Image (tube, rainbow, N blue to C red; front, side, top):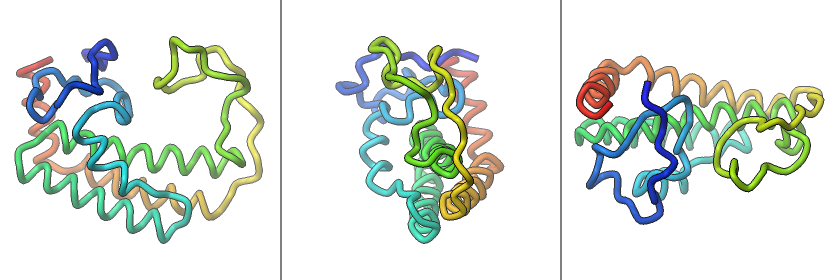
Length: 163
C-alpha cells in the first residue's frame, strides 16, 4: 500500500480540489494534516466523557455519510480516521492518566507522526472507566464506517486510480 505522503505542503493544499494527491496510508496517518477536511472535522472531535464522545462520534459519522453522498472519498476517509482517532486517543487516556504514553519528547523530525520513535512506553495507570466508555462509543462508529459498502467501493476505486 502506498504510504501517506508527508512531503506535501498540506497547509497550502486543498485535497477536495486535488483528491488525486491523497494516499490512504495506514491507520490515522495525515488525520491532522489534510485540508479542508481537518478544519471541518476537528471542531466536532471530543472524547472527554461518554456524552461528548457519543455526540462527537454521531456528528462525525454523519459527516462521513455526507462525504459519501457527495462522492468525496477523501472526506469520508478523513472522517473515518477521526472516528479511529477518537477510539485510540480515548483508549490512551483510559490506559495512561494524562494521556502521555511514551517517556521523553518526540524528536523534531518525527513531530506530527504517531509512534514511539525509540522512546520507552510509560507504565499503564489503572483503567479510567469514563475514557474506556468513550473509546467503546468511538469504536462502534469506526466499525460502522469501516463496514460501509459504499466507503469500501470508493476506497477501492481511489486506490485503483491513484495508488
